Image (cartoon, rainbow, N blue to C red; front, side):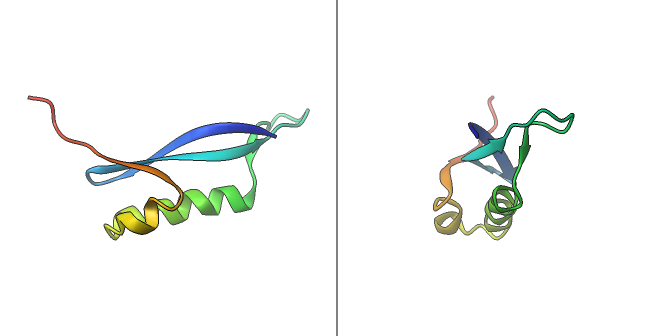
Length: 68
């Protein structure tokens, strides 16, 4: 397995989440396990609900602001 940082965002927030990628010799490689995909879904759902505490359990959460 290989570690990879994935970013998911909703509204003005983005979460930086570390996931494990499965590497094999087939054409679908590398890919996420179901558990890792659910982790990203849980983060996205927490961000959608503005539940920053829950989202931060999975990784760093940032607030995006427009650049003027």
